Length: 180
Image (tube, rainbow, N blue to C red; front, side):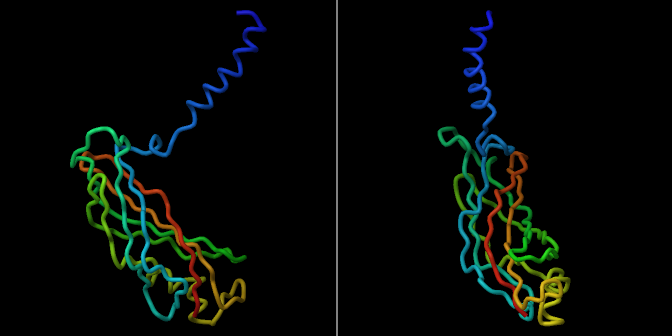
């Protein structure tokens, strides 16, 4: 193959490489189903450290077969095992509450939903440690001097299909303000 032919074919090879290297979300996860957080209900806008552990109203998880035209079976049902809550500051502060990992039990049938209620997202471990404990003990964040700590709360759920494939939901987030 001469040089001019190679130069004309190079963009085609590059395009084919890019097209095959761009994978959809479904190609990156194990198993034949996707677990997603499809709905939050009763999300708090503001949380007081004085009111103790904080829970979410209802979270709905959805299981979707990756191949909507294929056959499905109960082996694709997801047994939810745990969930994780992580925090990010939305202000200039850098201190964060520790992540929360909780066991959770339930099943999300393939191509169906399951609702989970009263899931904790702030427990004593987070409330009794800086920066949140600063609000209870001093009335303000000792790092920023603010009486409010704005946080982004991000949840992920972990499970396993009955066939044995580990499944992780995509993260879902909401914002809160933590006050004394």
